[in-house]
Image (tube, rainbow, N blue to C red; front, side, top):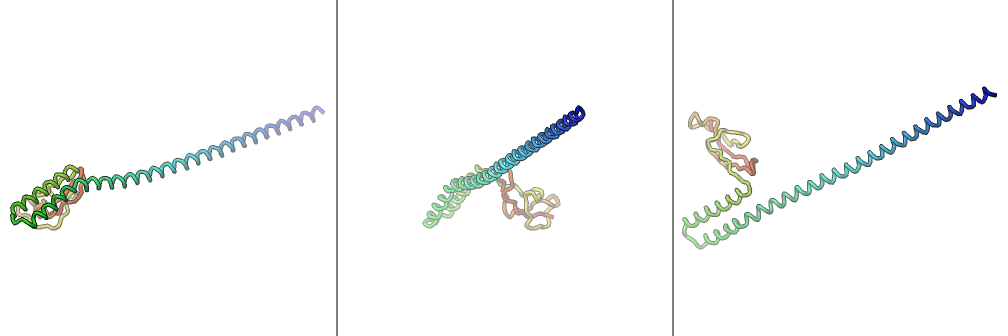
Length: 175
């Protein structure tokens, strides 16, 4: 009987250990499932947050563009008013010198407004041709050797806005 009791005790201990190992495995599995669910939740929330950030940034960019163009337009309205007054004055005036002077004044006013907004004209004449700033319209024989590869004529002036090229200068290059 002692031997039988001993076998039974060993069998119970083995069953207890197996049960404990199964319980540990179930706990580990449950922990892994919970961790996976938590990570999935974090991922979903982070993705949603990023998507909201992307949409908000896009809306802000559109609003900025609209606001910036409104700022420029409102700054240019006085120039438009000056042109309208000049057209009316031109209808009744025969004085060409006064007309010419009026257009120079309006031009200077417009240039000053645009310069205050960050516009700068490009100085291209006599400069070495650079594709970063210039667009070659045509090449002509250089009038002198020192003008080879340089801008000999500016067809359309180039401009910078806040140190970035807004419009490339259209130039004639000497060869």
